Image (tube, rainbow, N blue to C red; front, side, top):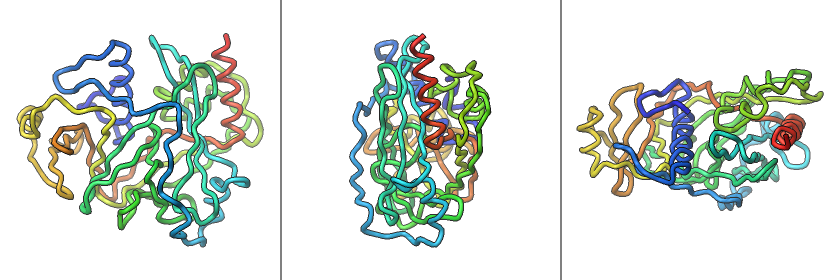
Length: 319
């Protein structure tokens, strides 16, 4: 990863996650340490999928637009939606895994998530995230490439996607669009090149030269989103920054100290990382403004595609 706090692309907060993972991987490989601005990152993960404590069917969502949504996510009948992840050591992939996202029954207001090993020696990583709106701070834990986590909530099913937020919020954070792309017959390498997450999920490292064709029925999901509610996103798993106070951060990066939902932050410019004061410490964060559209995000795959990609990962790691 080459992203730094001052080099944010249009991928927005998703690439801030990748920055965090780069810090976590780099610090882990070096046995710890810190720079002028960040302490060693905390890995909150483990091999177990976090328990989803959000309930589910207590608050039913309208089923008017359920056909498309259930066709993907409904357990037992949907085509499935999976994202990949990997563990690396010395610049090489040592293990891979995937996480499935589903609902059961139809009126669930939260996703069920299940992570599993695909190949090699793999331990799923999780990111603890805070979302600060005008209503206050809400936390959830998820895999690195999504906001679907332990406290997420499906606010509405849309004709081609859904609205997602966190339990306790009165309005959703995002409106997610799912663009389905048939990748049957395309080379595996061609498919993973279209995934905006391969630098960190390991797909390009393992399968960047794999020219075997994807099977019939293989689909890739591109999932751009629009911000519905202005909020600060904070990656708590990145660890505290080495600032004695938010004022110390401000003296270095500039900007004005502002407040949202009772939490102070500094956002030097529209193209910069935010610095957020949370429980007495300063963390990396990002400001997302209602109406912002983000289209550079990691992709997902249906069951047919995910099963085949898993087979190719096994073959690649067995060489």
